[in-house]
Image 1 (cartoon, rainbow, N blue to C red):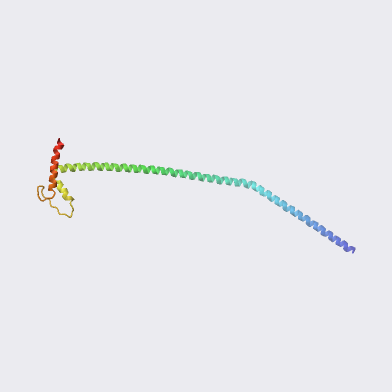
Image 2: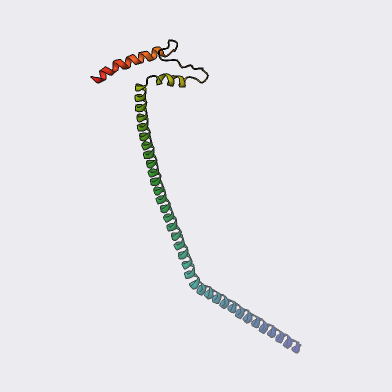
Length: 177
């Protein structure tokens, strides 16, 4: 029994030593894992030292690009505004030139009409029988016209023409005075 007790004591002692060894092994393993975590944290911190400036540079780069886009947009808007001002001035000039050209055309036409009327008046004054011809030309083309001498009694405009001749002759002495 002494041998068994001794054996049992040795087994207990072996179990204690094994438990102690397992405990030490677990402690060492935990310490190793803690050191790994510490090293990982240090690595992340070191990486952040390089990553943060890089991120800050990227943010600054983005700000500069946004500022450049803003300035380019403003410059484009200003250029478009200036182009519109130039276009509107050119349109105003074009309209003014067209109005001046139209006014000149009207003046020239008016002078030409006045000259034509003066020459027609002079011709009609010298040849009063032309009035008969003009009246006949202006009548409807559906009417049949027959020209008769001015002293003819059947022409319907004779009375009108005679009264015009009388008015013209009475108006001439007043003009000579």
